[in-house]
Length: 213
Picture 1 (spheres, one colour):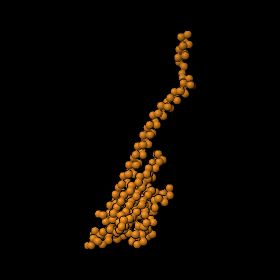
Picture 2 (cartoon, helix red, strand yellow):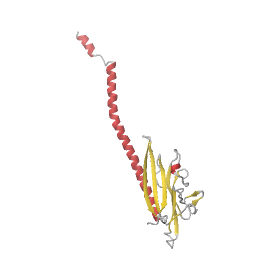
Picture 3 (tube, rainbow, N blue to C red):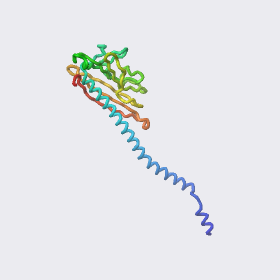
Picture 4 (cartoon, rainbow, N blue to C red):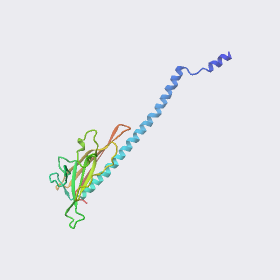
């Protein structure tokens, strides 16, 4: 009798017991993983949005500062801000680019026109050619650039960090006021998180007055 009892105690788990144990382990793992995954997603989204906000604010601050120093708004029709096939002058029909002429700080007469400063969106592979970011295809990545002209056109300068899946989705300069010296600026950036497959969008709107500085 004692020998039979020992044999019974030495039996392993039955198949049903094994399934129950595996099920419990899976449930515990899911209950542990889901809150962790949610926290990870929230942290990733927060990091992306913070980066977008910082990039947009720095770029917009630079634009407002330069436009505030501008003495003359250069129109597209004047052809004063042209480099080859690229016309950086402003037009109501193409408000995704703007050009202003700064005072002649280095000349004898400060009222004489000086350097031309432009702001526009373009693709990295052709950073001198302004495009409307709202019309860019899904695979294109418009970025924000500025160029200056004194005696010749300088190379385009990138105003936002070039990051993977970061692009300008909207850039508008709306000129108004009695003297057409006020500019409403809209800048929208978007960045996708590869881990979450989700786009974060951040938009800023500001105003500038030509000659305010």
